[in-house]
Length: 95
Image 1 (cartoon, rainbow, N blue to C red):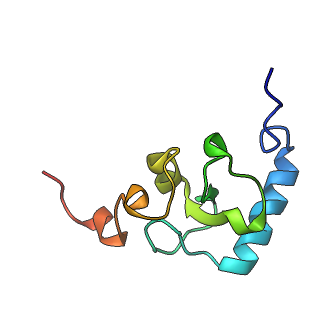
Image 2 (tube, rainbow, N blue to C red):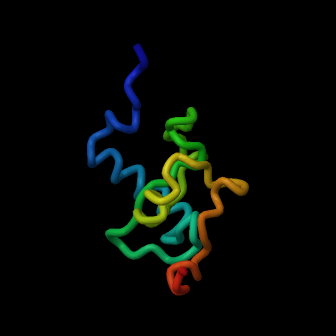
């Protein structure tokens, strides 16, 4: 039997406090696309995904857009695995 995921066992208030701490350190800039994050569209990105052993340490957390975070899924944000787009991706028509 696996142990429960500590992040999932946090209350909403605990997760928000953690997000606020990460935003205070890194600012409202998405670690995935590099664009500014508007209040209400921010989320926590685990640099090493929880599914791959990542934890809730502040070294493993950066701010990201909710959309960027969901598109990255459980890929790491470093190296080629994390290169899903840059900020211009949102303004270029994809064919």
